[in-house]
Image (tube, rainbow, N blue to C red; front, top):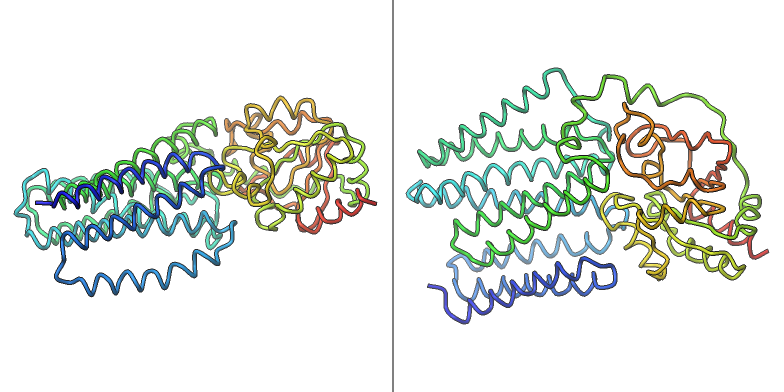
Length: 457
């Protein structure tokens, strides 16, 4: 029986988790929400250790210290551009830990629990393993340790379907037999299913998959809470599972596609449809910083479109300085933020908040597109797929149907790019070859610094 004081501690921790999710819903309150969530997690750990008094307390404390020694330096040193990779790894570790806990519970009880408990164990093992391997594969794609394009092979859908059937049969076996060896085999098959789930997903869709796997991890933790009889784990896992599911649906809606299309759309894409649009040598119009500065300086309205390249160059402070210089010249400046710009939801909002960009200047896609239609110049800094007209005009494109920022409706378009390399989706952007588009090649921070100097001069 859990002591009353421990139940109150769980209640306070659960409230902290709810408040943390509320805080994370806005850039203004995200930092506070994160701190509240961390405080709730710390309280939960203390209450569990004090109430249960496990016999292997020293080993648990040693594991906590070791994890902290490894994680704190990594979290402090990681660049904002690598934050999605860090999220993917943390999510995978959570799913893997939940699967291991379920296997240990299966070993200790020797299948003596009721069928509902065994069903929760089978669910935790399978879904946790899927989340673990799938999250590690999303990390590899985001880190570009492997190709970011969909990885397809002959009979892929049938192999995936067969793996799911085998996993379902093994899960039934765990419920009926309760044997540890069946649980271990189920975990191995779950690892395979996770890999097969993520391999066909293209780079531009990886953030959605991360959100989905995050929901998987949350549901796994909730099932683990049921198995262990821990109400706080049940609450925390349910919150993560629900929020991850909602975020996945919202991101899919923002991209104008269903979750099924994002996960399995590559199976229906004709072979070579993507490759046929890439690699053509076509002329573009480029200019120097002085010419672009003149175009910006004499504009009445400039809309800045930030993307992953801005984050890579750590140029958020420089873009803010450029906006300040333009405003001093009487130019109306705003920022157009696509829901999936960067590598994760809110990536650009957090990046620009670091540079103290006023929240009022950040326009979400629905309000940004009308602004772009009346803009003299659209300044695209490191974005590509989220402004690519192929989303509207090319049915064979992997981003077809995704709502985009209507950059092509501005009077003039300026792209700040390192090279003509395609975006994360691996396809060319027709807008780069439009007569009204000007390219300024170079590192984003260096190019923006030159623009600021030219405008001041």
